[in-house]
Length: 375
Figure 1 (tube, rainbow, N blue to C red):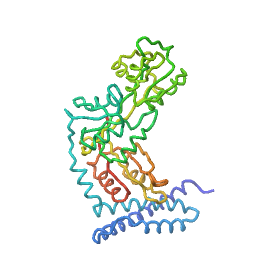
Figure 2 (cartoon, rainbow, N blue to C red):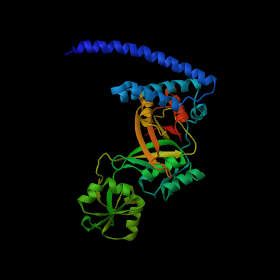
Figure 3 (cartoon, rainbow, N blue to C red):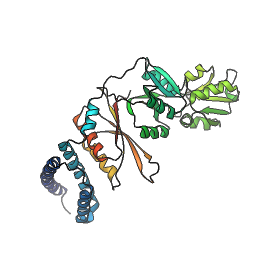
Figure 4 (tube, rainbow, N blue to C red):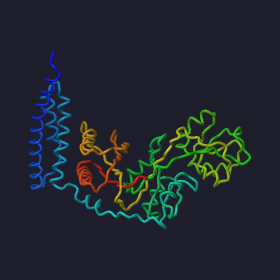
């Protein structure tokens, strides 16, 4: 049996040789990048990369799959180096680096889905205390209002800590490709609100938004209530007040209960006490504050084995922290997907803006969605 210390000594010797060879290979990649720049040749040559990967997998024999993975990472890093040399994505860089850092906040209209008292209304007030909250019936209507210039911004929920992603909003983000210029993580606390003359024992039916019903599912099941979906929580409160049915209550915010004259029959209904919804602010104009800390992108991936892993390798090599990946099917294309991705960073870092510019050159249907502060 071999001594472990001797095996480790051998590994150290091999690693020293590998580092020397890796540096030589990257020097060659640099020379290739210079040649491509002089001759206006695209950085990515997928056929060449596939040929190399197939070859090293075959040569690796019992370690073939590992060899392919190793070389896939090396080629990702080589390509990143070449992109920097040829100056990939200069047009996008210019857009990003010339973006205004100051968003107009006072006297502007900001659209949200729902009516007064809805969580979207409260989020809009928090984000734009001196703005004009403007109500729309659907998420789609908010995007259309931003598109037509009826409002400067749209405020939309994208994710709840308990119920997960709001898929309809992600679909609209990927369809419209508006900029994301702000975000808010807002704690959500629900009450059970009924008519003034109602008692808790009278309640049989619950009205609320499907997301809110999901966030309070344990509570609803425990009391054997019948849950009926509504357009949003404030609409549920308003309609419960209008219908005047003693056996109906709304799961809504405390502000909505007060707004529509309902009595609070129970409080803190959500399954998780840390229940939080993330809202984003969309805009047709790009704003990037100096202290922006989150970046959003969307793209599709080429039909190549390991393409998502290779993309993640690029982020890992720069020490960037991915905070969200969401995939949505591309309509009309079987088993093809668009990806939405969030990561922590600021475009005033050369590494970050270079990476975005590189991905813009390589990723199909790529869009830079914004660099913003998450409050």
